[in-house]
Length: 244
Image (cartoon, rainbow, N blue to C red):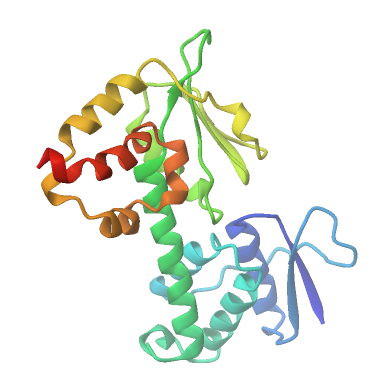
C-alpha cells in the first residue's frame, strides 16, 4: 500500500504531483490518500513528468478536489487510472457509478462557489487605516481559492479580507495572500452602510411575488445570519399579503 500525503483542504497541486508520480510508477492500484500536517509513514509525491489527461477530466479534478468528502482523492485517482488504461472518454458514461458520483460532487462545489459569490457581504473595518473591508463566510467545502479570482476582479481597488473556518483570504490591492482559519469575531458584525442596504432591499422586495419555498431554495437560511438584508425577510414575508 502506497500512502500519499496531501495538504489539508483543496490540494490540487499536491494531487497533480501525486498523479504524475503514481503514473510514472505504473499507476499502482493500492494507494491511500491522506491529508494532514504530520502523517506518520506517508511520503510527499516525488517529481515526475506531466500526465496528459483529457480537458474535461482535468477540469473535473480541479473542481472535485474542493469537495469536503474525504474520499475525493481516491475517487479521482480511480478516474485517472481508468483514463490511463484506455478509457479516455469515461466521462461520457453518464450512468457509470464513479462518473455519476464525481459529477454530483462537482455540482455541489460549483453551487457552493456560486452561493459564496452571491451571499458574501463585506463590512467596513472601523478605525482601519488605510480603509479596509472584511467579510465572514461559512463554506461547506474548500472553495476559498476557487472564489479568489472573482473577488479580486470585482473589488480590485479595495483592501479586504475574507475570513472562514477553513482559511482566510487577503487582498491589499496588489497581492493576494491566503491565511489560516479564523473565527466569526475576525470580521465586523455590522457597519454604517447596512441600514441603507437593508432599506434598499426592503424597497425592492415585491410582496405580490413572495414565495418562501423558492426563496429558501435560492437563498438557504444557513446564509441569512451573515447577510444584513436577511434580517428583514421574516417581517417582509409576514406582511406580504397586507402590502399587496
